[in-house]
Amino acid sequence: MIKYAAVALLLASPAAAADLPTVAAERWDITSTVVELSLPGVPGFIVRMMRGKSKAERKRVASGVGIDALLVPDPKAQCRVDGQRVADGHYVQALTCPQKSGKPLAIARTGTYDATGFVGRAIVTGVTPKGPMRIVLDQRAVHTGK
Image (spheres, rainbow, N blue to C red):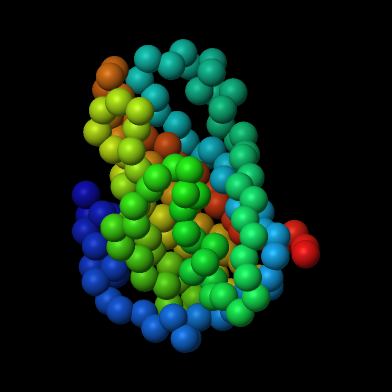
């Protein structure tokens, strides 16, 4: 709970987009790697198999955009950005993402950035029909070319 309060406090501080470093144009890979997983009703061997697995989201960005363009959620996920602060080499972001059924998922993202990309952690929490769930992901954005 304290972590979420800290996220809310950081999100309340404004950040000037003009102060953000611009990133290289074109293709970026944002890789999410499962660090921790708690999914009620999922057999333990499947949870163990999922730990350490990665998935890359590919993005294209225009020239002259800031690092915050890489933090925009995939439109297909239909996530809402509830708050975001990107300044002084650190980012904090709070998202709400719908599920097919049930209450939406909450995602808290924190990390560091520079003109070459970002490194951070995303904590996904929510409730499934079988109980509360939590997923911790390490995330990294890397420029992959034009």
